[in-house]
Image 1 (tube, rainbow, N blue to C red):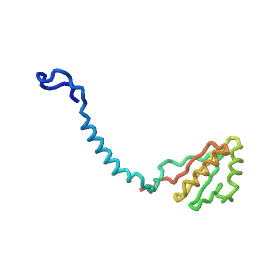
Image 2 (image 1 turned 120 degrees about the vertical axis):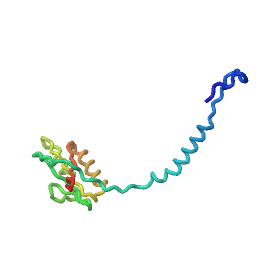
Image 3 (image 1 turned 45 degrees about the horizontal axis):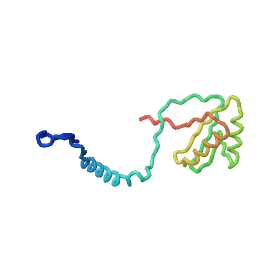
Amino acid sequence: MAFGAFNHHRQKESMADINVTPMVDVMLVLLVIFILSAPMFTNAVSLDLPKAKAAAAAQPAGTITVAIDAAGTVYWNNEALKAGELAQRLAGAAVRTPQPELQLRADRATRYEAVAQLMAAAQAQGLTKLVFVTDPKEQK
């Protein structure tokens, strides 16, 4: 960006033009880089979620364990539920005082959709205490 000449004897007035050629060159290079790298961001990434490292917490008296296996079967305190029973049990748990803690255990191969539906059903019934249970990290 030049606003004046180095040789002030030849050009007495200031130069009012900004040289945008370097900026256009940089923008074109960035455009090419983004065009080439865009397909890499569209591929799905398969994740193998890590195990959590935390000490086991003591279970409060009002704890309900809900488990989902890889097939999508829901278990209420280790008892398999039928299709319509989950909403009834969640509604019954929501009216208890004090409200119980809902411990969610999901198999590693469980679809996220099943977990999200269970969480939405619990929220719709008014349960506010939801805990995710994981396996402790293996010691080496």
